[in-house]
Length: 121
Image 1: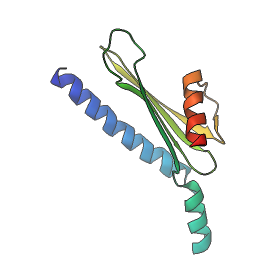
Image 2: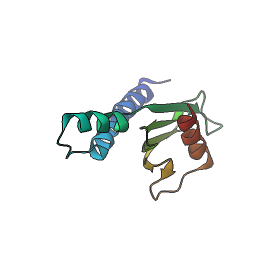
Image 3: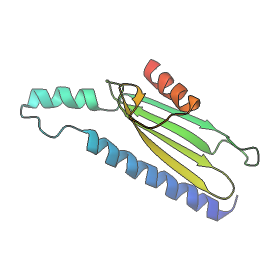
């Protein structure tokens, strides 16, 4: 594999981490006055269910370089990040999840399966 593709993979991974932090911060509650309420709120909203599935969606690309990452809290709300890698490009999709369901965006059957696996773990 050329160094160009390795650099692309590293940059995409860093970008995914950055997006994950931004989406998580956006969903965090900001107006909690008491410390005990804050602790309970943070506990409920902290990422507690994680599922990573690597796969190969295309025949012409070797190894499992594509993936789905599900990050959910105790209320089964969070994000789903899907990365599809082929020889010429990498596409990254981030979708909000609320109560185990998509927040208005269509999910593939594989994405639905990944969410169910994250919830059941």
